[in-house]
Image 1 (cartoon, rainbow, N blue to C red):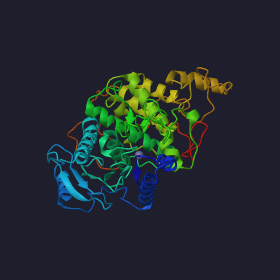
Image 2: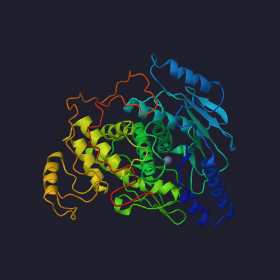
Image 3: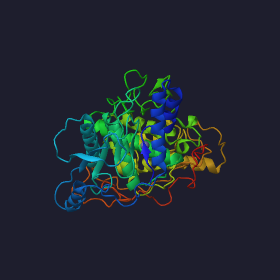
Image 4: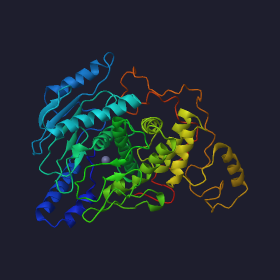
Length: 460
Ligand SMILES: [Zn+2]
């Protein structure tokens, strides 16, 4: 199990290099060393839902409660917030359990609220009970180490640093950071994507998407009102930046002498080929991030409704390969949108347009009717080197003529609310409740062989 940090290593390395103050440099180095140590230390199992770190009774009670409540009581989050008291032992002292009132420590309350907001997004919008779908308790530790400049999910729990006070504030202050990190747990329990190359960048993107949705849902914001920033407010006032990443405009979140400039691309033409950062997982995530943003803002309304449902249903379909490429994921979201809303629906069209705009799908993605023309054209040997032409076959092996999707029950009741009475979904690869039909039309999977092979580029 990989330990997932919100601040990518290249950013801390840059800070270490540019800090004039030796004390500050040492802090960044210490955070980096901690991160590296956690990265190499085996953490939780990826399959079993670990009830909680071996800790005191409340966690165990939570686990039992979640089993017991499977049939009866409505699910609710089971939160437990701990204080590391500036040490590094986890989980630390339990300071607030589920249902306890606010405590004087702001970080504790912020963490409690962030866990609750994320739980609510997944439960109220997608019918999912906690990150494993079976009510696993949400464990968090605040005040980890001294001036620690990161937050992470270690496969079992969330951990938050207080920040250095120079560049970063406390990491509990941003709901989307908690949402991002907990979504790592959801990905771990569902698609189990590899944390490398395009699959890793997809993982990062899914975490950003649901992290932002957790905040939007909490605030009741429509997609057009949201900031689409991950880590909004995490920087101190002196920093020229609005957060760590932007889904609206990847590459624009910060531009500061100490941090450098946000290096995220938003289009496949700027895809970063690197071996650092697990193949640029925190960089290339800008591309699928922007695709989601485009879907959400094209459709309008609440992004955690239709757009979120398309992404969530795709994530939990059980059909994504562990090495999923951007193109494969794009095709899967097209398929999901078509089966949820119909092939000619605005939702399906928005999905296709968005992936085309970020360069993951070829410019002229044939519609189902066009695909017939396309196939005829291909048979007559048309020139294939002019991608922008409306219906020319593109050289990429990607979603070539989407063969007529065996029309899934378009008459499906527009289930906007998943059945909340559904028993806890089995944790792994569980088809999500609202999925109307197995989205695997015979032989329509347009994906290329399961290698990293996006149009024209390779991740690793
Ligand atoms: Zn992450």
